[in-house]
Image (cartoon, rainbow, N blue to C red; front, side, top):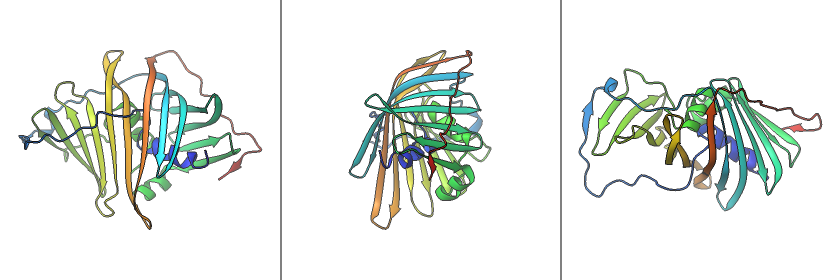
Length: 256
């Protein structure tokens, strides 16, 4: 559990709930690509008032691996709440608001607070609440702009976006119009992050990715490092029934 807060932060920045498998593999033959008008592409996205679910999360960093159970609650465009447990023991909580991300480690009696401005400088792209919420749902991480370009491939679309020095590539199934994969590449450092979505099942009137993987590749003095987060939802529900988001930090906890 020692490195759990840092790994959870990586998870919360890029997405949170999806998992293992069904990574998109390029076809052996060269795909047919056609540039089409930007406004002709309509991506199916999840909409809701309140969402709650539970699942299993595996966090891998080098030779270290942590597995936790997670419960999640979301009030649209407002707050994301998570409760983590390890072998039946509550390990921590996370609260994501429009102002900041707070992660509490109940095992070590400490907590972390991350401001979006700080995270944006570190990762060289605009990190905000809307991006995290979108990644959790399998929605577009960035708003559409007239500068976006769209490529029509054999069985998918590729929506190309740019934010600062970060290129965002969205791979969208032509059969379901759902995002299957997102790649973020930083032009100067060549650091990259890849999210794969899988196991799409009906949620209300739309399809929702119950599984996914998040892979972060970044340069460090020791060389190229990789952090992987795997998540499997076992249950997800949406509705308009109001949910509670209990979160209080004991006075004896130290801020790190």
